[in-house]
Length: 160
Image 1 (tube, rainbow, N blue to C red):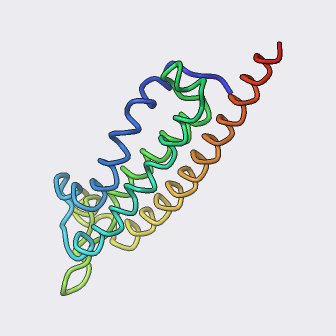
Image 2 (image 1 turned 60 degrees about the horizontal axis):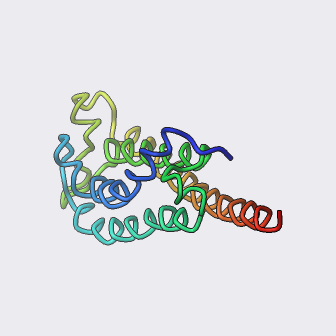
């Protein structure tokens, strides 16, 4: 697992993205035209849970000596992290909110003038949420794999 040049950006940006992206999905989507309803109120708790979950992989990378020394993440971790970020942005654009009188749409339905229905937008949001969850789990696993590899290489170097 190689350290990549784009991993330098991820090494730094992951700390900001872990806070900003979950909150953008819940609250910030109003800035891009999404109507806000009950999801904002209820979602604040899920947003806080999302922030905590998003900080797990960056914290794990700090235990990888090679990543910490080079201040850049490994290729597979970098890819999984980008997938999480893109999936969360898609989720923010497509998540359908609800109000007292039913669904109030998503940014996508507003942008397309309801050419994209709430059901289609909600389906895309569900897929994006699933992709984000799987990619976040993959980032955790890849961070742990990096820790193990770094520990093995440091033990091999110590015995040589």
